[in-house]
Length: 499
Image (cartoon, rainbow, N blue to C red; front, side, top):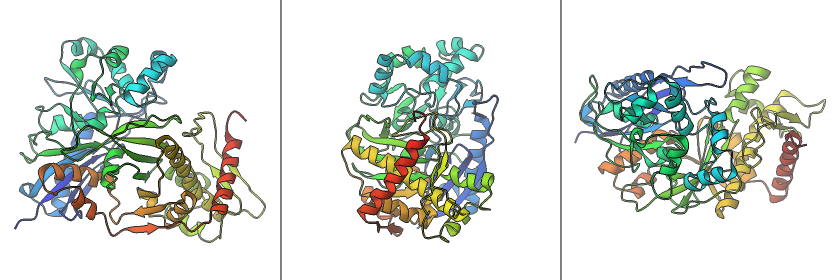
C-alpha cells in the first residue's frame, strides 16, 4: 500500500517552510526559505506578498523532493501563518495593491488611538472581539491601505478588492483565485470579527470604514478550502486545514480541553490556555481568541492568550551586545557552571513590560550585582528570567480563567534548553512536557487537514502521536519558590516607570 502524507505550509514572519508528515506524525521531508523584511520608515514593517507566495510554493516542491514524495502521495495540505499581517489585492488580476503590512508594524498606532481611544469604544471592541484595541491587529491596517493607496477605496466600494491575512492570500493563490476564505482563528485576530456570534461585525466595519465586500468567507479551521490549481504546482491537492500560528501550535500540542496550556519559546513567548466553550474575559490585559477545533465540533472553542515580549531575544542580546556567549546554545552550558544566579535578576524590559504589568515605559535592568558576579551568573539569570515571565503570565491566566495550570506543554527553540525547562517546572510548580517532535505549529496545521480528510481517525489517534517526549517535574519547595518569585517581583517593581 502506497504511503500517504500530509503537507504543512508554515508561513512565518521571517521564513516560509513546508513539512511533510507521515501517518505516525514523523517528518518525512522539509524545506525553508528566508523572507525579506522591508522597513520603509522607522516603526514600519512590510513584506512583499508575491515573495510570500513564491517562497511558499518553492518550499512545497523542495519538501517533496527532499522526502522523495510524489504529488499523488499527498493526502492534503494544512496552512499555518503569521497572524494579523494584512494583504489586499485586485480580484480580477490577483495583483496586490501594495506591500503586506506586517503584524509588527506600528504605523496605525495613532489611528487606533483616535478611533478607539474613547473608553466606551474600547470596551465595545473588547466585548465583541476579545482583543485590546491596538495597531497589532488587522482592522487599522486595512483602513490605512484604503485611505493611502491611490484608488483603493473606490475599487473596494466597487467590489474589486479582496482583503486577507496571509492564509487567505495563500489560499487564493493556491486555488488560482477560486477561493477567498479564511478560518475562524485568523478571523478572530482582525478586530472585525465577533467571536461570540461568529460573524463579521457591521458596527466594527463602520468604525473602521471598511466595506464588507473585501472580506473573505470564514470557515472552520478543519474544513474544505478548495484544491490546488496554481500553474506550475501539482494540481488537485485538497487544502483542508488552516489556523493562525499560535492556535495551530495549541492544536499541535493536543491541548484540546479546558485548562490545557502551551507555551512557545521564540523571540518572545506566546502562552495560550484552552478555555473550552467559554470565552473568558480577562481583567489583566490578556486577549480572548478562538481556538482551532476538530471537524464536527459544535460552536466555538476559545483560548486566553498572553505574550512575553522578550525571550529568545534576550539570549541573542547576551551574544550580540554583551558578547558573553558565542552562540545561543552556549548559554545553557555557561549557566550550568554556577550553582545559581547568586541573587542576580535580569528584567528584559527592552520594549516595556506586558501582562500583568502593562508598562510601555519600563526599561530593562540588571539587579543584585556584586564584585563576585561573573558572566555565568548573568547567563543563568537571563535564562531564569524567561521562566519568571512565563510564570507571571500563567498565574494571570489562572486568575482570569479560574483554572489551575498543572501541566504546561512547550515548544519553540528555547524549549531545547534543559536548564530552562527544569527551572520553569520549579518556578511554576507544574509539570513541563516537551514533545519528541517540537514542530508543534506545522504539526497542528497537518492534524487539522488530516482529521478533515480522515487521514487520522480522531483526536485520540493524534494525541497518541505526541508521546515519547520528556517531562520535567518541579523539584523546588514552596518556600524557595516564593522567595525566588518575591525577588523577581522586587526587581520588576524597580523597573516600572511609576517608581
